[in-house]
Image (cartoon, rainbow, N blue to C red):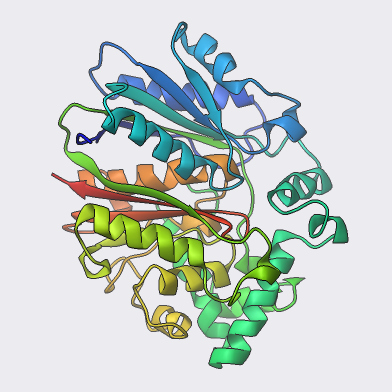
Length: 377
């Protein structure tokens, strides 16, 4: 396997982009990425998306976007793994370049959720769970997270304000981020006084949904940022069949392989982009990525360790909670943000002297986990 570098990065602002179509958003990100790097050819296109079929009624996104970009006659492949679509698409593109099959590829993550009514969006997101035994009951992804949230508080005596502090930090980090959907501070008190989304999870502990697109160019040419590791793992599809619901085995397996692949340990990571669909998923991820002992994640966050100037900067552009969660594109945003940090191009969101960063992208309630580790050369 040969080294793979990040050759170009582009992001569009996350929000309700009423004037732009799914195709418009994807093309904007892709063209910006292509303009950011000197490259004479693209060998393949990977497009990450979750919900274009139920929301836009659109499939065959690979051919659609390749045609729109003038990239005809190349392989164009759509990748879907629920909200882990972006991370898995990057993994597939990485393998293609690392193996020598292609020299330069582009990965585009895109999602447009504002076209649909809230109940239609919720129905589309529920497709990440089993339709015969889980989704048919009416439980949402937030409802499943609520079971974990309550169990975590009971088992580890974690306080609601400790768990909610992750959302407050994410909003703090989003201030000044030009592509963030919610770039403003929110106090822990305000979070805990917001309406219940699924008891005990408050509305302001959940990520919203938005429109957005992000693009990366992966190349075999030497660059300033290399992909030190890319892994994917899956857990039991049914939350009820897991040995311990509070242990995200897919996260543990994927991160263990990634650390081994990169030849590092969790102590060598300078910053992390977590998949904080809800606060409890972020807390559990911190623990199962190996950064904090089991049961101490909430306390670790509440003590300020994950701020940009803390021991382990987390969600440095706001994470899913405040940067926004364009679902199938989220994993591409995460890796792009880590790359911007390592390139020193994060502006007001910059973490000083960052050399190694990790992005964690989850599908469903951590049924799928993608881990990408980037390293500055």
